[in-house]
Structures are given as structure tokens and as C-alpha cells.
Length: 401
Ligand SMILES: *Cc1c(COP(=O)(O)O)cnc(C)c1O
Image (cartoon, rainbow, N blue to C red; front, side, top):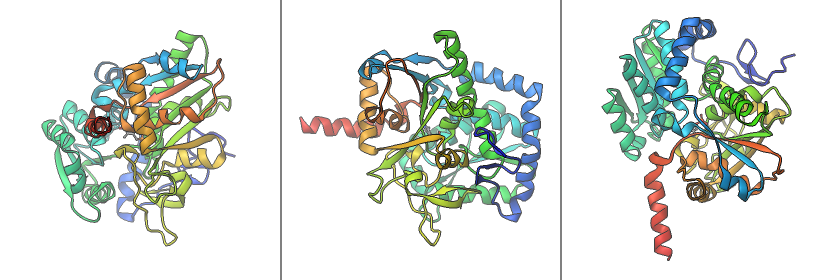
């Protein structure tokens, strides 16, 4: 029996979730990736270049910071894994560096990606510029209007941003456009997916690239605190890549508690939520079987979260399995709770977090901590990109006074 949580079986299944549900026309592309990704990732020259870029370009290892005032508030030890200090402001670049190096070794000259808020698009455009690769980013027309600064960043980095003008003109329409492009350009193009979602081997491949986060946590705990594991690791979950990276090396050690925080939007049962495990059913979304928010006749439900990165109607198959098996604890935080937590972390620790990340902090009030516990929270990104949302909140606070 397959008992490991961190890696899927040969067909890409974590328990009952995963696999590759793709149109015939994509088979060649995905098959090439499936047969090659492990071999390439294990090559010495790949490892060498990947690790060198993580160190000198991304800025790794990121610190494991003892948040003393936050720890004091909960009478315990809380450590923050500072992915917000990565180049481009979040964990996403760990994966794009890895996939760009892999694409080069597959002989690809052209990179495509889809993006919602633009964070994955910016990370992809960044590494393509570094490597001199053509970069095309598909983005919903509506998202392009909502996320103008990120569209400008991508263009400044030399990427072509193509608006997706069908459907709701948001992320899922951009994903459809990217898939269409890949079908039409199977030989020279690599499609970089930005989270632990999509058909096998993407979830496993992205989790491996992001697993550097928990590898560093392990080393830092040992060197700085003299322990080989934390009591628990917490992270927010959109598709689940920062969480997968932060959990990875602890998943198969049942002594480490795994806490995943989803976005409840206006409330789990408000009809405006993205708490996938609470609202979803087993279904197929973007090429893999997972837990999906959909109606009884299979229509994907439009999710809602104040944070664009968590505004997704599914979760990666790894997380669906963690939820279903009980290995992971899944809780959620509303828009309002996340906003409050963002201000609290800013004022307790002098760190303005991304709105996505703020969800992981918003649940601390509901948790029980032992004084001897060591809790690691993945601080997935910085709040610069959310400043206009924070400014609107500040204005509301001033108007109230
Ligand atoms: C994109 C993003 C997320 C959500 O994506 P995951 O794949 O679930 O990690 C979380 N935090 C930040 C800062 C992001 O940019």
C-alpha cells in the first residue's frame, strides 16, 4: 500500500486524488514532462544551477524569524518562515526558477503561464528575462484591469501579456487560453503552472521545487533551536504550493501537526467563499481529481476571497488527501479576519504580510498553544501588492474615528 503523504504513486495519485485528466491533444506534452522531470531534477548540473540561483538570485535561505511579540501574545514560540523576503516578494519564484531550468533542458524556447492576480505571471516573466526566454502570460481581461501594476511589471520584464476575453474574464479563462496555446505549440513551448495543481506530474514537480522551504526549516530548527522538528507547521492554501513546500519534509512524520488555512471569504456558507474542503466535492478541475467547489451538475462555482491568490475553487490533490485522510487540520478565516490579522502582524512584528498570508495568522486566536510548542508559520509573501486594499481599509478606519 502507498502510505507516504509527501509523494504520489506512479500515476500521480495521492490516495484517491491526482492523476492526469487531460484532452488527447495534450498527451504528448504532459507525457514528455512525466517521463523526464525526475531524471532532469536529479541531474547534478541541474541541482547545482537550481541551488545557485535560489541562493544568489532568489535570496535563499530565507530567515526563520522568532516573532517575539506574537509569541508573547499566545504564550508560546512562533517562528515565521520569511518567504516574503524572496525576490519578487513571495514563494512563487522557487517554482518558476525550477520549471524554467527544466524547460531549458527539455529544449523549450518559449514559456507560457496563466496568472490571476499577476504574482505567478511576474515570477515567470522575471525568470524568463534572466534566461532570455520568450514569455507569454495569459490573464483575464478583468484581472488585467484590477491588477495594473503587475501587468506593467510583466511588460517591463519583456513578457507579452495576452488578455483572456471569454467567460468571466478571470483566472479560469486565462487557464483555458494557456492550455489552447500549449496544444497548438507542443514542441517548443513549456507551460509553467504556478501551484500544486494540474495534471500529474505538476503537483509533485511543484511540491518538490517548493520543498526547499521545509528543508531549510529543518536545518534552521536544528542549528538555531536544537530540535529536529516543530510541533506544528501552518500555511495558507490557495492551490497549495507554499503549504506543500512548508509541510513537505514533515508530512511523513505524524508527530508534526499540519495546519492548512483556507479563505472563507464572507463566511463559509455565505455563497461568497473559497473554503474548498468545506464546500467542495470530489471532481476534476484543471487536469486532476481533487476536491472542487462545483454544483451537483458539475458546474464550477465562482469562489470569493479578498486575496486573489486564495480565490480558487479547488486545492491540489496532495491537500485533498491530507484533508480526507485526517493527516492535515483544515481551518479557515474570513476576509475580515484576514484583514484584522494583517494589521496585527504589521503592528506587532513590523512585517506587512500579503493578504493570502494574513489568513494563516487570522486563525491563531482559535488555537490552543502549549508554552513548550514550536509553531512555524509560512509567511508566504509581502503585502506591497495589496497596498490598495490596505489603503481602503485604513480610510475606513479614519472615517470611523
Ligand atoms: C499565490 C500566493 C498564495 C497562494 O498560492 P499557493 O499555491 O496556495 O501557495 C499564497 N500566498 C502568496 C503570497 C501568494 O502570492
